Amino acid sequence: MSKRGDLYKRADSAVSKYVRAITEEKYGGCPFCNGEIQCCFHFIRRGYFPVRFNLDNLVGSCFACNGDMENNPVKYIQWFYKKRSKKLYNELMVKGYSTNKLENYELDEIRKKYEKKLTTV
Ligand SMILES: [Zn+2]
Image 1 (cartoon, rainbow, N blue to C red):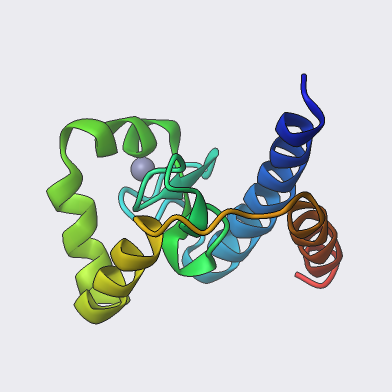
Image 2: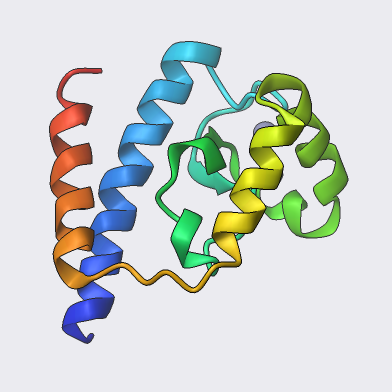
């Protein structure tokens, strides 16, 4: 794997663990179905790199809801509007479609930040 690919993988892993931990603390399970938290759910797909590690774009979820997002996004976007806000969703969309690229050092900083934060959950 490329260095950059590895930096993404490690940042994904650190952010995912943290998001799953804070979701468990807040909702006690998948916020959509109350199942077991197994994934880091992205409201705006992970391929939109500028919001891939943005906590506003993330929540822990079960595998089923994470997969269902592909086919039934409206359900999850409505949840977002209700629990977070439509304004925030629109802001994330704008950021997500921007061309800002994360530098390698930023990916490393993201990983370190969330590994550290996880120890405080
Ligand atoms: Zn679920």
